[in-house]
Image (cartoon, rainbow, N blue to C red; front, side):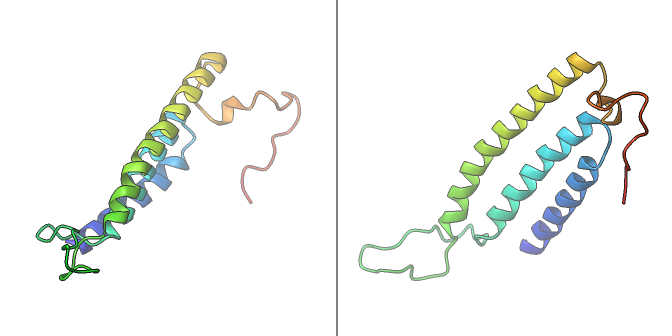
Length: 125
């Protein structure tokens, strides 16, 4: 099960980086959303995936008697979901506002701070 989730996390990271390298603002926003989900799944997978044994310590013991799932990554994922959603919502509003002002979602056409008659800066190295 963990191998399948590791492959899924890798696919999410690859898809998010591919989308964030695009020139279109909507694709960049979708890449940010997928990146947040990939990070959440990575954190969740790091805490062992066991359904049979809950992470509860008996009253007479100081440590769990059997191998259990780690509750810390689960708590971190709950916090990370809220943070990544608010981050995505902020960028969505920022992208929509930029589209309203500039009339385009192409990143190269959004370069309004650069002079029109000057040559373009290097686009790659």
